[in-house]
Image (cartoon, rainbow, N blue to C red; front, side):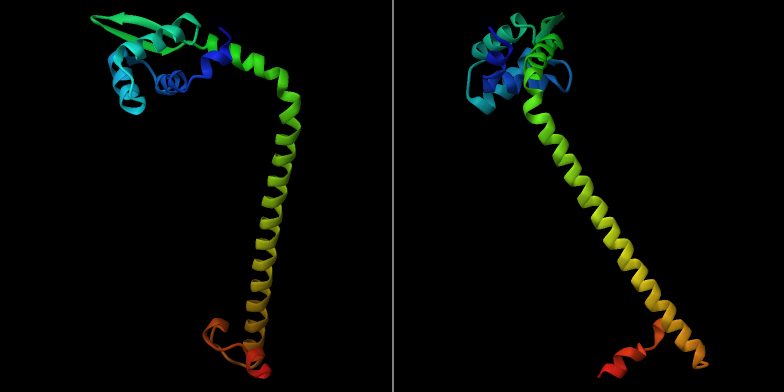
Length: 150
């Protein structure tokens, strides 16, 4: 069975998701999968066997329990097979990364420009207040430019 055939089954994918958090007992896996997919414990056991036989899961006994974990060789095989197609999506992902960086840079520049404009307005207001001999901070009185425009 090919690695992607193993991953093609939603039950097996979900079991691997559960195992990605760490070891889990067969009973705990069966309880979650049974509830989510409505399948029996023997059906879950069969899926666990497929994962084990295809190199996606390991099992170790602990007393009467069987603890399952992800075997990295299965996902590695799938990743290696998929890497042949990197040429199709890697340039697009790189282009997306470039566009995201441009957007972040543009937003940063706009924020810096807005902050510089606000600082210049406060500085001009303070200079006008000082020239008028007024000791009040510039932010405490209305801006003279708005009064002139009205």
